[in-house]
Length: 92
Image (cartoon, rainbow, N blue to C red; front, side, top):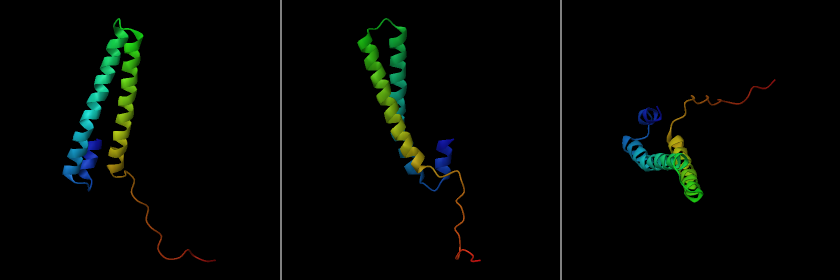
């Protein structure tokens, strides 16, 4: 849905494509980190490996959040802008 909104907005198609391509690596890192942590938890792995996997996942989540902030900033607002007041406020 977000991708469709971006493409329908006034931002250019090349910008949207570049933004999404840039996000692909961050998303893949997040998926890989999550899978690694799942393997560590379900397998017979020492605590140091679990700690590293947890740290990697935390870093991947932070990178994902930062990337999604830039995507969100590029998206148009769902709300219609409020009309600007014209003239001076009425006097009593």
